[in-house]
Image (tube, rainbow over all chains, first blue to last red; front, side):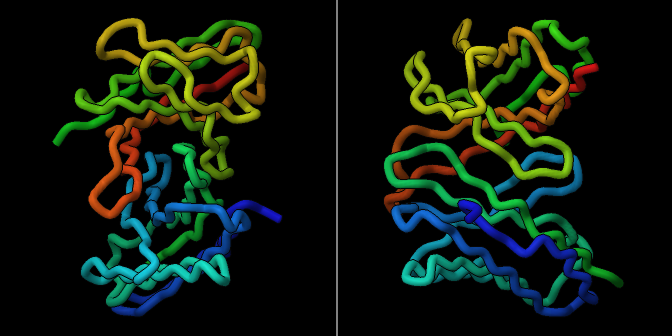
Length: 110
Length: 119
């Protein structure tokens, strides 16, 4: 089983749509969780950290379910500029290394 | 806004040659990292570095790889004898050492990457 698993997509959605990405992780001892965004041939950039209570940042909402080892990202009112690959990222207890999923590609269409 | 910088942006080398990839982390950061991403694949952790020594490394980081902080600003990754399968984008990252207010580790900021092509 992959350490961090994501649906690769692509998700093709119209502007204004709401889209949800899911991610599962295999190591129950994982401590920290993130969503990163990666544009084509660019570096990963932190979109948001994911906390147990769930957190929201503008149009973006992240949820964590530790019991199911499941992380989600919801994007509301999609913009053309949201087109990118969204990376689910996990960090283990006592570790600094980030473990990346393969990413889910989003294409927002006019 | 402070940022991680990397040079060169693209390096082409012959198989068996040594390459050195350079990074300048954000100035007040104390943890430094190298990751790589083979084209079309996921980002993979190579090594982390703190207080002038390796703090963690992955299975990928074998004896062909080494890291160094030769001065107060640069952080380098050396591949001693490159193989075709070393062709990838190499990302340097840095982070502050202490935890954030939520108890988690602070964000790792990534540089723009060096695209290494081994022929």
